[in-house]
Picture (spheres, rainbow, N blue to C red):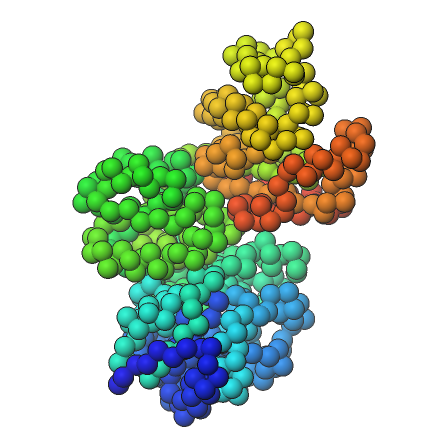
Length: 536
């Protein structure tokens, strides 16, 4: 069979692929997550061809893709209101819901289960193909079973050449890992496979959510998978993977110790140059904080590792919580859940704008037994006690000198008014504050240490954290809090906020976001739920 790659931009190619699907053939299509191997979900004969092309085990169920919310009732029965609430928030998008199936879904899709996973992809080409076909499409990832999932049409061709008639090319996938799969049949939604829609995002809509233990540790012997990606060693290159879990600094230190000239390293951008001096080959996932880039690059990098021919690969794991959970899950499955823990303490970095709720977060975590290190407080102590720091600041900002040292009010006026001045101050102070915080972290007796650092990422202290939390809040509420708390006028408060990062900054970098919309009881509930899950 000749496998053709056809552009998804051309209407005639969508029409051609839809006709193939109606005739019972299998077609590869793009989605925002990964490329899928699609067939008519109502045709047993067509769905069997998916299993044959992939070499997929017969007890591994498939996900059904729809293009209209009205199709959900055709596929599923007894749909709870919570499912429609999640659909309204996350569809089209990378969320699959497991619900009770109807008779319109053939048995080959569900592998004998009475449930089916359904999602509405956000990729325009996928939506147009489903509509043109006029039928829901069963579509697992378009790779040979066990191999890294494909995020480009070229990846699909590597595995499917000669096995399917065509691949519809929709460009590189924007998300890069498969959808979140959530079981909606109980009172509390349970995540069976992590994805871009996190447990915290689902809980924000429904008031609660949980993650199945198999997502972290794999299924027990004899346990039947309720979702794709639960049972078998998936996403794996041919090389043996050693997954190092912990903070970026801790995993980098371990990698330097064990990765030699005959090994490959899969690491974060910050450590690539150093590791290249001792490792045989270096591949990168992006900067250590960039959870979106980790997901986008992961499968393509695993395929690059195969092409290189590396036999053993040391892998720096992204932090294992929140937005990183999907990438970590895929890496754990790729290495058969054989991981190495680096570091003994849980180091929680909390950041956010002035008035966002960092102090309340720290109070609650302290009540749970965590030791809290306040970067601003340590900075104030150093201004009082460190002649070296005072001299460095005075040399750069002579107008902020006072008879007792540094006039902090005057210094704040200077740096909040000028970004270049603020960057110069940070360059001076960060080295002193980081050194002192690391000293106190090492001396801490608690197994959980919280770092309260407004400039967590700018200072580089995020790299010592095992989880990072961004406190976010609407601008007008922040403005009111700052003026009331600090006794300053609105103009000065606006200038302070303008000098700080916005919500998008924390959304891109932080593992977990906690929204503080003004209801202190609601905020405390969120923080307590976080503490129960993430403190040691």
